[in-house]
Length: 118
Length: 115
Length: 213
Image (tube, rainbow over all chains, first blue to last red; front, side):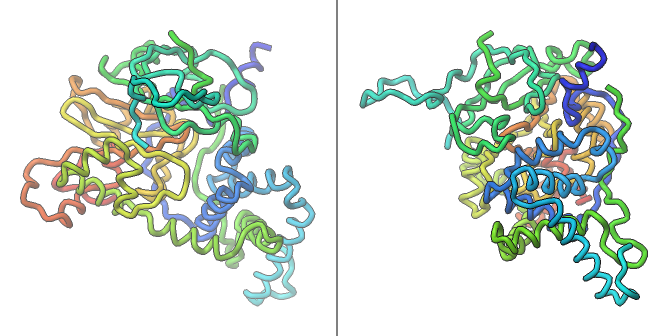
């Protein structure tokens, strides 16, 4: 139990004081979708559909593996999906269908043969 | 809203304050951050648990507990956050900077006890 | 607890070789379009918020700093209630946060961080740089601030207190850096050009050869 308890007690984002690597001065401008994602977060918060603290808790809930594998705004997109499902606002099925539709639409716009999913 | 303590004068009208309306702590108070381990969501970092410090300011107005807000509770029993001052040497046993260095952090009222 | 994560900020191949949007861009689009179709949010609100985000840049923070340097009444108001003073200048806060402006002095050097996530004074500075959101800065600023400052080329004498403010709740911070000597005759524009985002985070001072990163 001694090995497991700290895993439960320390959230993956609670890293203050864990001495690590040098600061690398990364300073990249946002992709357009990332900025839309940030705007979506703000609008969801205004409406209290997903408030900012719920989003933070949602990111914590992803767990270390997914947090490590995903970039900053990628985590937000997944969290929005998770929370919207939990709240019964959207279903996984309708999101999956919508995503397939967007893929097909963007294939068609790019003039791909047959618009097949990638 | 100015972040200063209430003046210590008698109120003009006698009213009963709702829970959380009056700040429990005042600037200068010696406090200790509670030492409990909530599961799932918290906003008081582990490095702060059980540490002693001083209230520097009351953050006004009283607000919702952000830890409860994380579960979708957007309204409720409002209380105050407090800006707490703690020397670095009190936080970190092997602190290597100047002994004058310090931390400031906001903590919700329900996480603070009188030291 | 070991951390094997890769802690990066770049998206994964978001634009594929054939120009197709990546998985997460498609996910974001799907969620937004569904929410709009179902009437939970409006497309115009998203468009507007993108404009709000685009309008908040370090240039705003620089104006606030320079006004505090040159107007002692404003400076006092700013230090007493950061949000109210900024709102007087027409800088709205579109959220519930407070703003505390941290004055650097001969005896105190301020530094801001959000160890738990990436809280940042967005209404007055815009979006935070990646390094502010990544692990090394967030983990180390509260335990070895002087070492972190040194990585930015900033050395603070031992008799000056380094004061680190960790935002975990409703308060956001803006560092009010010290005005460099030799700027007494500078115009407001020239002063504003000296004040960088990094100086308002507190990792560097304002110097006569400050250049916006």
